[in-house]
Length: 133
Image (cartoon, rainbow, N blue to C red; front, side, top):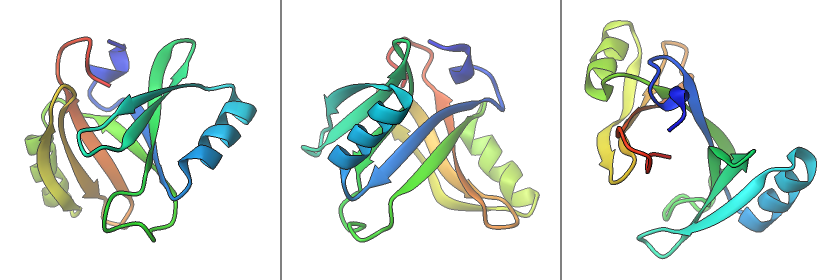
């Protein structure tokens, strides 16, 4: 597992949710030379892991159900030692928890927070194994 998945404060992942996965995959593989690996999701969808030199750096997926009309957007992930503690710290520092912490089997525990200006980011504590991200 990359050290970025273990280092508190490291930007560790980027994720695109989009209305047109095929177009996004074609675009980014062309301009960035990304390697793309499709993986089935439990809901029947597909999650495409984006790789550079064989190492996962992010993912691409269809907008989630109920959010089909949401504009495509990139979301950065920040590694933290403890998602629950970081959520409390975010609130104490004037931010807000936009989505309470939840567990992602085989990956880790995550939440969505916003800073006092409204800038949102996902925070993640990765499981300590080679399956994370």
